Length: 241
Ligand code: 5RP
Image 1 (cartoon, protein in one colour):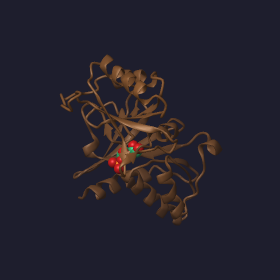
Image 2 (cartoon, protein in one colour):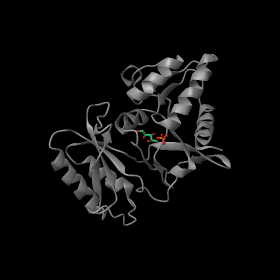
Image 3 (cartoon, helix red, strand yellow):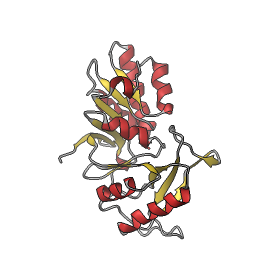
Image 4 (spheres, helix red, strand yellow):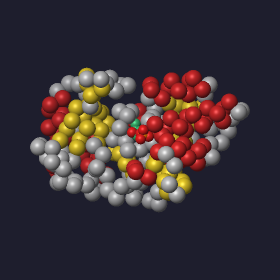
């Protein structure tokens, strides 16, 4: 099975959880795109749902498929959010934000009774940290914020190198008008010492406390279930605590 076929298979499993009348958070990224595609087919076949997109990029796809959309201000609470992830650890903590949408994704997931992740099995890790952690920062005093982020990692015993997120040769700007730095677990010379975020909840708290950090890509205790596709099929994982 190709990677795209695996992503679609995971999305198809998540679609089985959707019931008529549900209010759904629609994730961002290539895996979530498959889900929106399949949801569009179901809506065309008569399913009635309403979606809240987690990014401007995601908004265009459901619009073109005729999926009714609303804002979180309209709905306040959602039944379920379906989204991809960059890493999933055994406790079902996540790294997200590879697409730069983790701020809205976290707001939408937090407003949902259930967050369901869909992914291929390359996203499963024994500890978070191989994927660079996206941190959304305000434009003001970026260097000051960067130093505080580096210090937060150091307090967890982790060396990190902060790489400005770029797109088409210029700084990537999020839907909320902020910047992103990607925290790589490397020393200042770019050498990877095999760092692992052993205490993601603690690092999440430290990063959230940095003035200038708008949101980081650690999703702690938000994901309730995940459909993970491999060559052997799609397995469901449930968070137990
Ligand atoms: C976007 C995200 C995505 O869900 C994450 O990057 C996974 O994307 P993909 O399904 O394309 O691998 O967090 O901000």
